[in-house]
Length: 187
Image 1 (spheres, helix red, strand yellow):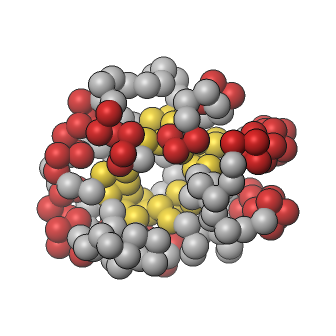
Image 2 (cartoon, rainbow, N blue to C red):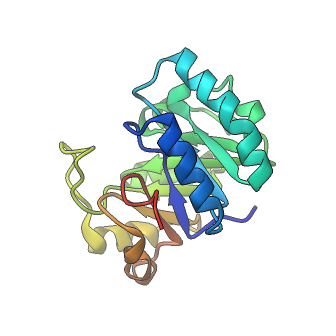
Image 3 (cartoon, helix red, strand yellow):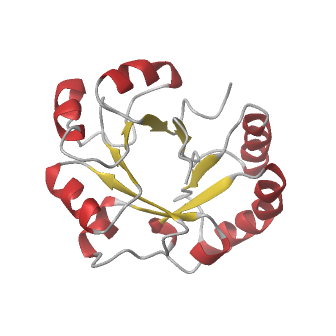
């Protein structure tokens, strides 16, 4: 499985039309994977969006990873699953086949060890910096991020308050790549 260095996560507040425009634009700039995470939508709206996205991602050969917030019933139609921190706590085994992407959001050494046990393909380690979406979480900073990233052989994505311009610094601190929401949907 080819993991990208830049891994976008869908913004919650964008209209579907704007998201579609951004996916099309990013596809022309080699977008190969993104995570679908739209917590602001109800189940029916999510299904509608995914039905509309399916032919587009197929046309552009883009892998769509479903965030576990949306449940596991959608996984079979798409390229993989990304467990959020809450679902990580309840997981007992790898919930998807080996031919699908499987990622996990981690915040500490305990989460990383569990991700290894569950045979994740990659992890998000966050938040590196303070973010508006997780205001109650203390940021790791690069020093702690680097120490935690060195604890695993899994590819680690830096997440939290970063932009695409932070890729070099992230790599210098042990990251495989960077992931993000707000600063990742334009070129």
